[in-house]
Amino acid sequence: MDKIEQTLLEAVAELHEVPEGAYNIRSNGQLAGRNTTANIDIETKTDKPGIDIRIKPGTKNESVHIPVVLSQSGIKEMVYNDFFIGADCDVTIVAGCGIHNAGDEESRHDGIHTFYVGENARVRYVERHYGQGDGNGQRVMNPNTVIYLEAGASMELETTQIKGVDSTNRITTATVGNGATLLIREKLMTHGDQIADTDFTVYLNGEDSSANVISRSVARERSKQTFVSHIHGNARCAGHTECDAILMDDASVCAVPEITANHLDASLIHEAAIGKIAGEQLIKLMTLGLTEQEAEEQIVNGFLK
Image (cartoon, rainbow, N blue to C red; front, side, top):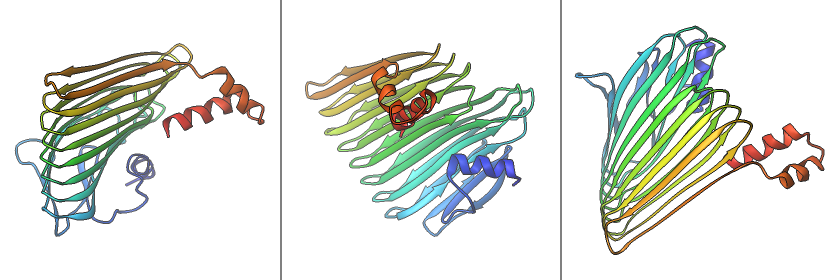
C-alpha cells in the first residue's frame, strides 16, 4: 500500500502494521491481504462481492479486522459480508471505510454486514468512517448492518464517523432473542455541506431481552443530520434510545426517537436533546487561557469521547 492508503487504514482500523489474528483488507475494490486462524475462517463469496466470516463455537479473545480503503477517484462498490459467530464466543470485529478522493468523480462504498450471533456469544463490533482529499468528487459511504442475536447473546456496536464524509445513510436493524442484549453507540461529526442520515430499528422479540441505543453528534457549518430510532418491545423486555446533539453555525439536526410497546411487560424509554454549546462552558475554559475556538474544540472532543 502507498502512504495515502496506509493513512486511511490507520484512521479507520488503527492499524500501523499487519494485525495479529484474522484479517481481510480491501483496497480499491480488490483484495489486498487476508489471514485466517484455526478458529476464524474467511472465504470470498462466489455469487456476489463480499466475504463470509465463520467463527468456531467457543472462540475467545480473538479479533477480525476487515477494513476497506479507496484512494482512486470514481470507484463505486457494493459488498456483502456475512458473519457466522458460534455459541459461547467472545470476539472483537473491527471494520470501517476510508476514502481519499482527489478527483472530480464520486467515490462510493456501500456495504451490508449481517451478523448471526450464536447462543451466549459476545461480540464487540467497531466501525469507523473517514474521508479526505482535496478533489471535488463526493466521498459517499452507506453502511447497512443486520443483526440476529440468539438466546443469551450480547453485541456492542460502536459506530463512528470521524470526518470528511460528504454523504452517508446508515441503516441498522436488529432482532434480539431471549435474554440477549444489544448496545449501540454512535458518534458522528459533520461539517461543510455534509449530509448524514441514521436509522436504527430494534425488535426485542425475546423474553428479558434488552437494547440501549445512544447517539452523540456534532453538526457544524451548513451540514444536516437526521437521527431516527425505532425500538419495538414484543415481549417482556427493556429498551432505551437516546440522542444528544450539539448544533453549531448554520447546521441542522432532526431527531426522531420512537418506541412501540406490543407487550404488557415491555419497558421502553426514549430521550432526545439538541442545543448549542452553553455560554458558561466557553467562558469557564476561556478564563483558563483558551481561545474561543480552542474552548469549542475541547467541549466537542469531550462530548464525542
